[in-house]
Image (cartoon, rainbow, N blue to C red; front, side):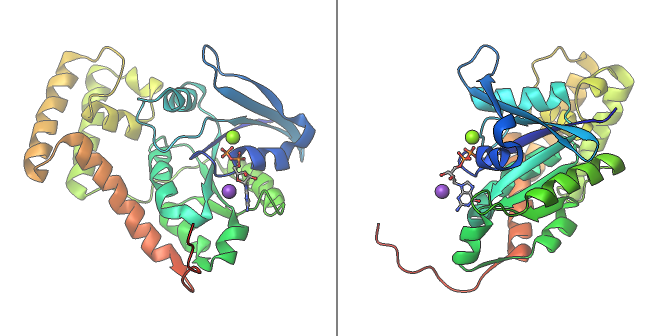
Length: 272
Ligand code: GDP
Ligand code: K
Ligand code: MG
């Protein structure tokens, strides 16, 4: 069919709603997420023979499932399986924003990064090599400014292009041994409880099993296997599994950030 479903995800206060406003204007509808008093904004627009449905997810810093907003966001992404995630980031704060990006990529859904607040980033002297960001993360990246109406057409055209291609490639990875363990976890799931693979994206599932972070009955053989792997990794790395995973994500963030962002000059001294 010709309906493309796009979820807008990002940290709080990065311009998700402003960007959706710039894209959809008067088509924007405001409601609530079921059962909670968190605002839900949605819009459907017609573009080049497609209907594009946007849902503005609550702003989150990670998808750890502990905060109401995070639960709404992760549940939506896993259950509704949108065709594309539009990950809005604050270009003046890319290092902090990219952590969520790395987590979103674990969901194995095609991703577009909107490098929003680009106007301020330019003003502050950041030089962001977004073509390199695209190569490193295997995603589309588009400089945008909801304030100056920059990048809106590019976002819409990219949505259609990505929808037509429908491929997802995971480019950045954890340390080799962890990746090997994740693969083995998936093999064991395929053997003992393959239904899990229709409920969760593979990579997300393997990591969530490792972190013991799923609210679903897990086959005892899988549990036992994962517990053994967890123990091995905690021994090798000398830390708890949650910390190992968080640090692996951060090491990707830092490596990408250092290769992509330069600052031409220091900010003027800000005394506030
Ligand atoms: P959300 O929490 O991600 O939905 O962010 P909002 O859409 O509410 O925007 C947060 C603030 O950033 C508001 O004051 C916006 O006016 C401002 N803002 C949003 N996009 C841009 C942008 O591209 N450039 C600049 N300079 N400010 C922006
Ligand atoms: K702002
Ligand atoms: Mg908002």
